[in-house]
Length: 112
Image 1 (cartoon, rainbow, N blue to C red):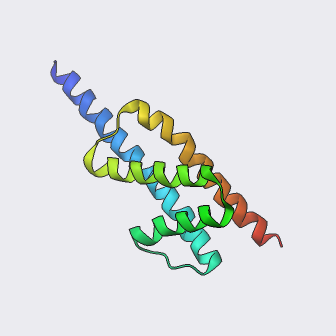
Image 2 (cartoon, rainbow, N blue to C red):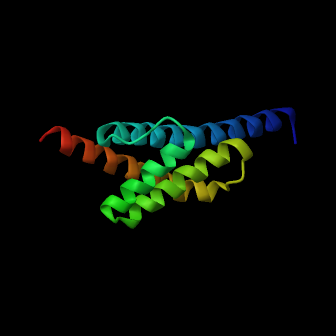
């Protein structure tokens, strides 16, 4: 591998990990907003996951449970780099759909 090849590989790896953390961050912010709206505890990792589980229980929606799982996987990937590229491609739209659903719920409640 050439020096340029090594640099390119390192840059791609950094971007991959940063993308994972950005997806987790967006999920976390959505969970903070919904927690504030519903009066739930928020601020810690555990409370963020619990809020996602509570929302899933409240709405009985398996897609929400999948969103919590996918976001959590991205968070873990940021620290240990355990995801394969295809897993990221599969999980990214799940997290995005989860966030869009949460934002929609917040918009519904604020328009009432």
